[in-house]
Image 1 (cartoon, helix red, strand yellow):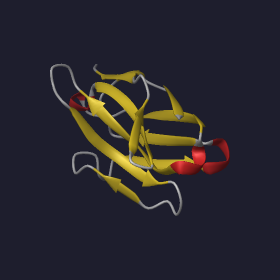
Image 2 (tube, rainbow, N blue to C red):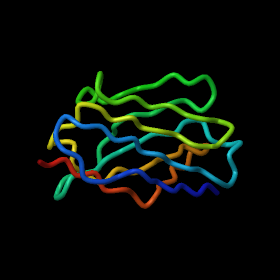
Image 3 (cartoon, one colour):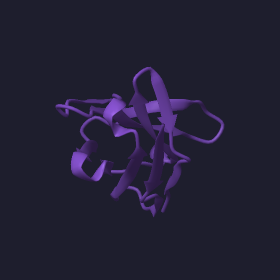
Image 4 (cartoon, rainbow, N blue to C red):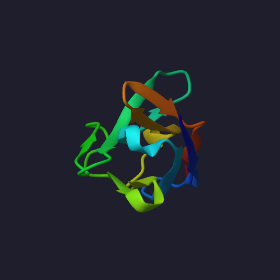
Length: 116
């Protein structure tokens, strides 16, 4: 099993930046990728970004390309999401995801609010 704990959410003004962190623990050897999803109030959970645990290639949703950057620290079992040029529509609960063999693990989420 894998446990995921997110941190770094908060209230930021439009145009600002935040960095989310996700610390993973447990059976790390089976992880192939980690990533971030978000869920806005009343909407479905959507993919934001993902990074391969070995190699580091990354994918992004079109809505965040050029503004968000996903990175990882394998030694610390941590994945990060640097979010720049934030917009009100980025407001959501952000969930960390780990793909462990064919199983997806989720963190409890961290709230990001973009408002002036």
